[in-house]
Amino acid sequence: MPFDYAPAPESRSIVDIKSSYGLFIGGEFVDGSGSAFKSISPASEEVLAEIAEATADDVDRAVRAARQAHTRVWSKLPGSERAKYLYRIARIMAERSREFAVLESLDNGKPIRESRDVDLPLVSQWFFYYAGWADKLSYAGLGPDPRALGVAGQIIPWNFPIMMLAWKIAPALAAGNTVVLKPAETTPLTALLFAEVCQQADLPPGVVNIVTGAGSTGQALVDHADVDKIAFTGSTAVGKAIARSIAGTDKVATLELGGKAANIVFDDAPLDQAIEGIVRGIFFNQGHVCCAGSRLLVQENVYDEVLERLKRRMSTLRLGDPLDKNTDIGAINSAEQLARITALSDAGDAEGAERWSVPCDLPDNGFWFAPTIFTGVTQAHRIAREEIFGPVLSVLTFRTPSEAIEKANNTPYGLSAGVWTDKGSRILAMADRLRAGVVWANTFNQFDPASPFGGYKESGYGREGGKPGLAAYLEGSPA
Image (cartoon, rainbow, N blue to C red; front, side, top):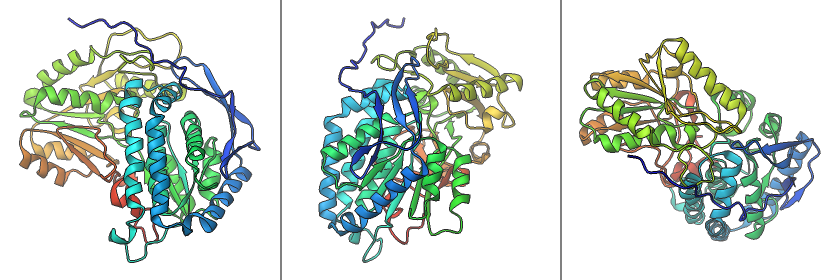
């Protein structure tokens, strides 16, 4: 019998949200020259703050500040000095992690347990890891005298705002670049709080600049003639547009785009462990994960048992207030994303798949979608082909490893995959044939700053994390 838990809300008092925010350029908060937009809490639709929308002129100011900082200060510092700033940022992020976690859950809608126990620890780890690289570039096998590209334009998504910021900024600074970063328009608040961390760490003015806005702001950054590198995480459609925009220029790019990962369960898999991995693979962060295991491939002879266990486990998930420490499933990030999830799920119904959703009460305010699985799915269904980016799992079956490989690779994406089996030799054989940048073995959605992350095909190109993530910010980079 499931336990009932009393509400255990995390206090909001640790976070001081200002009524309005400007842009962070040249080490200071400045007014933008565009209009303002509102950042709202997806769990309650409460307005959290007004945010400045950066125009092309504002982006130009930020790029000029970054270029000046690179030319006069950052590129002249020895790696050991750059490392000190990165270590300082890492420590401050660890010290202020609770504050960042609460703000992230408010602005994004993800459960506080995830922002507190996953996102923020990884942020600190990323800065610590790349701080260690800053004075070792000449020994990394990247050439005898590795040089920074210069000014990096970075555009991050709304699903992991502060974590994606760390993935982008830490290697860029370690390699000797300066940065102009644009957070997603629905989740700008932790990036703006990070600007305060840069001030607290006494980072030289202009080394990190943050410009907020929507697609036009990002386009101005991509198109700016004095930006040397574009790093983008987001949708495949926007990634393709960026690739077209910079074609024929000297800019290099790292694009980490969409995914439709296969999570493959063999009949000899440790099923208790596999069920937890399936749940983590698709319902972590409400399925707002580019590498989510949104296609479950189950070997036929354990299909009924896996489905029964999965439904039983899903029935224990708690949906509700993201700041409640007992919450497993938070809010969908925006009304726009909820509409896409709903439309694709309705397409699954219309095409004959069988829907099962966790019976639960959805709050009256905010954007919510109950964890859902579809069975009777074929590879022709839209829900098996298109990235839903929500808590929706398509279940397919297979008989042989070759059939599992064929179905797993039958996608335009190639970001990640999971394999669940008791046989190490089978794991290695599957990983060798799966066309995915990351293959997890008897686990899912595990990240480490030393491990490169990225995809193939329409999941983008280039890698983040590890030494390849550092190389992407140095001259001669393959990215």
